[in-house]
Length: 80
Image (tube, rainbow, N blue to C red; front, top):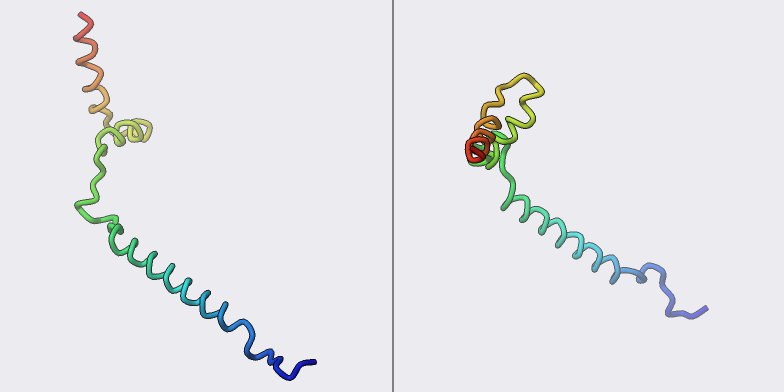
């Protein structure tokens, strides 16, 4: 066996690269989260198609489905 063999010095380069890469991934995930997260009660997070979605999913739950009926009326008038 060679005198230069020391098991305590092997693999530190790979460990450092792995730790730096993991830190970079965590920083990237944190940055994306910070820039894009909106709290569910944020008033600016209102859905663009809220009325359409409420009509589609709310009609089965007994909620009013008036917006869906409003869209069908102009098409019926256009046929006449």
